[in-house]
Image (cartoon, rainbow, N blue to C red):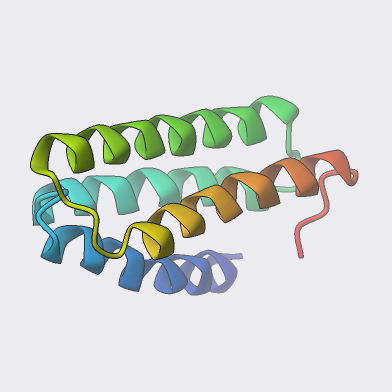
Length: 106
């Protein structure tokens, strides 16, 4: 289970590094984001998954996306917008898809 979670988190690192480079989040904030995502990923990898686990993760990612948009607007930062926001939106979409398909994780 841990290897799947670590692999998933490693795929998120470039996105988090870009957010940090662009000044949208501090290094400390990106570590908190990574830790929160890790907690959510572990909940989704348990044998007893619940809809609330998926919905909590979706809610977290949605709020993160809103915060990202707010900070972009505040800083006037629009570079790498498509890549970063698309990866978060894709993650939200995937969570809905997985939860609707009998809670099977690819």
